[in-house]
Amino acid sequence: MAECEIQKIDPETEFLSSKRETGNEWEIFKENVRPLKRGRNVNILNNALKSHTDNHLKKSLLNQRRKLIEAVDDYKGEDPLLPWLECMKWVQEAFPPGGDSSGLVVIYEQCVRAFWHSEQYKDDLRYLKVWLEYADNCFDKEVIYAFLDANEIGKTHSDFYISYALHLEVKNKFKAANQTFELGISRNAQPIEKLKAAYRKFLIRSMSRTKPVEEPMEKQAPVRSFGTLLAKGENGARLASLKSDHSSKNNRTRAAPLSIYKDSNASGETGPHQPDQSNSWLKLGARAERNKENNAIPAKWKSFKIPQRPGTRTSVASASACIPVFVDEECQDSLNLKAEGSKSSSLKIKQEDEKDMKRETELLRKNPLRNFPHCSLPR
Image (tube, rainbow, N blue to C red; front, side, top):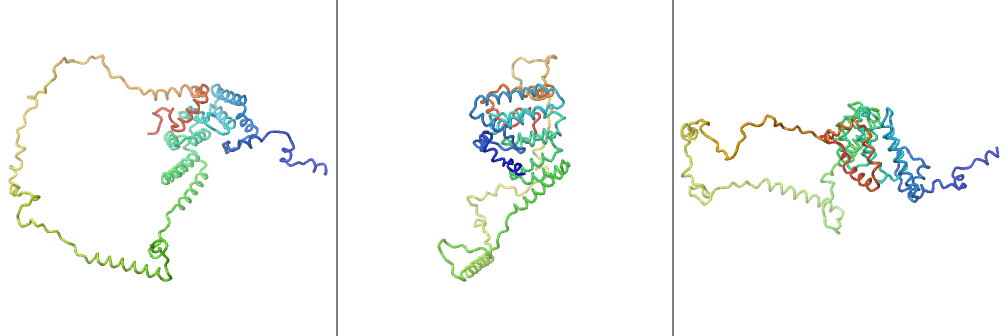
């Protein structure tokens, strides 16, 4: 028993007694690590943080990311979303700061754009979470939520309505947020208990935002200049004097008669601003006299000819001439996406360098649907 007790060592003491370097990188760069809900693997995290000072390790991370993207193109299984999810998970682990150079925003955008028209993933919770993570990395989330609602993506999941309503609440659009919660409940989004619990919390927060009741006139302190002191009893006396002054003003207002304006030129004299009524219509006249402007006799329009410009005229248009039918190229591209699948969408990131990646990420943050066809956007 004594030997067993001696062999038991505290994990912290064991780590300090060992010569391992695991954990040092985390302590140095922990303020630059973006937190994840599922947590992080410490070994992968330390190797990723070493790339700040090791160029060889940084190149190996970029090569690994390129291989994962190639695996997306080479996938032949029944779940083409799976390699995308594995690639995103690895990028989140390998690039802890999650900056523009990680390419995570570009991968989000290409993934959601590859399957937005697919009926297979419209009700897939994994695909919806990719959309929500993409929205968290953009400046205008409401554009993405409107797109999901218009294309009926994730409408059976409560996570969509909760995330959308909380965003509206942050924007002080409380009525729209309440309608979003009610819409999710009416559609019986699952899990429904999670949605109702979030709705109850929203109502509690809404009740706490009610305006405070204003104090009556009697309880308000009298207005006085800075530095003056009110003696005991002076507060009530001054308040009484204010009431008496207010009542006397009301009495004077009620007693004042209303003055009636009288025209000084009413005796019949014509002033500079008074119209001369000598030529005015004192009598309307008979009906025939009033309708005298309608007595013109109508003539045939065929007797009048429109003057034509001199020049050659084409008698009859050629039968071969036709009006070309307009074809929207962007909508045509969206139809081609259904046939091509996700291959063409993932080739872009492999050819971009770090500068192009940062520029594309910044553009996507400002306009998350910039690469989508206009016919698919909500009106």
